[in-house]
Length: 269
Ligand SMILES: [Fe+2]
Ligand SMILES: [Fe+2]
Image (spheres, rainbow, N blue to C red):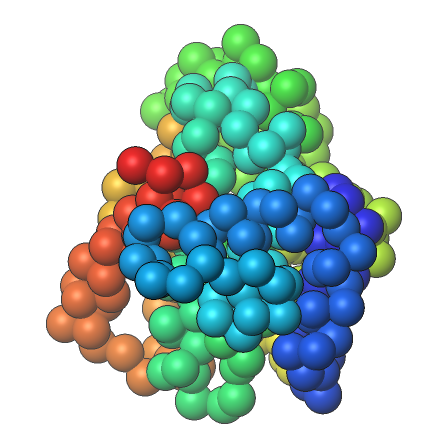
């Protein structure tokens, strides 16, 4: 991952930062600057005057979008590779991650204790990052995993990964997050998003937010292949989030719309 993306993620996790701090990081990265100007000047935004400075582009797009672009532009190697071990296509992890991020950002606003929408977004983008590495080792083993699941030897995908390769995408993701020195709450989400009750108490509001966001992303048609197998929603999310069935259904719809918008602004139509 580029050092710019890592620094941006650290920065948005820190409560007292300003847009100026973001600008100072972005403007030193030629590739990212180009990408951001390309996005803000794309027809999607319909601006009459072209935006030429990083400062105006960042002010216009907002930090969430800028961080999203930074991660998206430096991580195509990660997100756009087929996840062979998960029986899914090259863009599935990217789509799933972005949808989880969008859902988690919305859900953060419904958290009973304070959860930063920006941090929830970043955590959503990164929660399944371990899959990018683990998929390589799971190649050709999908059938075996499904079979074990059907025989009742494993009860969810995490156990399936453990049975086949002796580790799972949460543990692998945690090692990656440590290596990148990502902030602790993000490490907590990466490690515990499937079993949020195991997260440190202080991180649980955020971890439950992404746990539910993950589910919403799957409901909006973005799983990463067979990993949805045996996915268990931890009902204790209700202790952390004020959302009902109706609210969740609406969220699924708005995630689909937001995702298409984001895709269009990054890649064009
Ligand atoms: Fe996961
Ligand atoms: Fe996920």
